[in-house]
Length: 389
Ligand code: GAL
Image 1 (cartoon, rainbow, N blue to C red):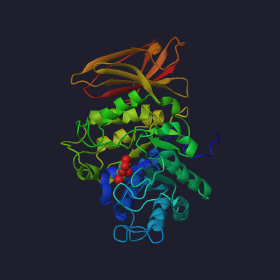
Image 2 (image 1 turned 120 degrees about the horizontal axis):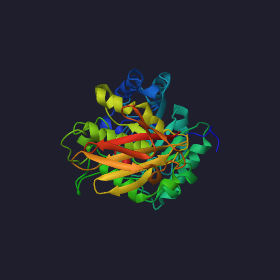
Image 3 (image 1 turned 180 degrees about the vertical axis):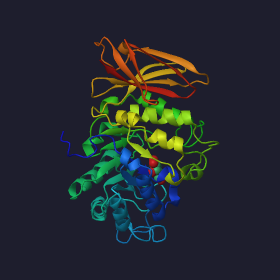
Image 4 (image 1 turned 90 degrees about the horizontal axis):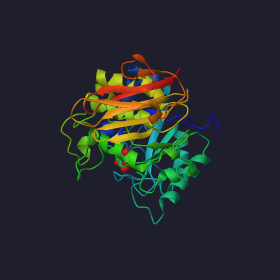
């Protein structure tokens, strides 16, 4: 495949939903654009700034989408210019139904007109949700209609399919022009959701990605998407306030580390979802860790898979383009635990006499003939880059 196609590696950016939910305004988007630049997140690779649900006016005139006159008074084109002027790419949201999940006008049956509007406004990325009336049309049909409309316009627009995994979009996402497709229900800012709670916690998504076993569908220009990042979020975030969740505290540092370590091992699209105006130092350090981001963006584009899931201990790994592998040692339990594995039980090649082990959190390096181990704190994940030498 040609490198001129979009999303050669998983897209990185920021999306408004988890931070602001339906209260988002154009001022929030401008602040996020400025913050991406000022906090060096843009330079770390987070280049897409995506406005999620609730940017539209309540009604369309002749099926033409319009920005909400109160919350987005300057209009989308002016906002996209502001984002582009900061060296970022601009993303927008609609739904493959009559309405968005929050009840705003959406794109089913008006795909071409809307794709043309998006292109004229300078949209570089479309997140396309699954809410509203479907008028008897199945998911493949509805998502293919927008895929075709985007292909017809004279602008490269990354197509992010948000179908929640209901109809196995990994089976057909690429075929309808998608560069990424949500594999799971919505992530919430919590370690583990209660049984009757809206959404999935970080641990729930890790479990779901293990069960789904869809790594074979994942690769350059077409990515399984375990949903956006909640690093930095808790009960105060826009989404936590808006959705029927029961969140009592922010994710801890260990939980945030495990969240990012797994999303990078999975080669997931990384969409930051926290309010960047109040981003803490620890969260900033996690999100900009270049050793982790290199694993996420590895050119081979393989999705990490579990090697061993046993009680509180989990070992996951993925092969990397340099001939090595990334190996994650995850402690699900409440006590510090020593977790061991050996190269032949991971995705690393077995034929080297020795290996360089790089601890992706600290940057420290070790040498090993094959044993990989770490003392791992509760809910934390040690992540190593293993390179044959
Ligand atoms: C959900 C989607 C979320 C967010 C929300 C907006 O369907 O999964 O990521 O976009 O709608 O209403």
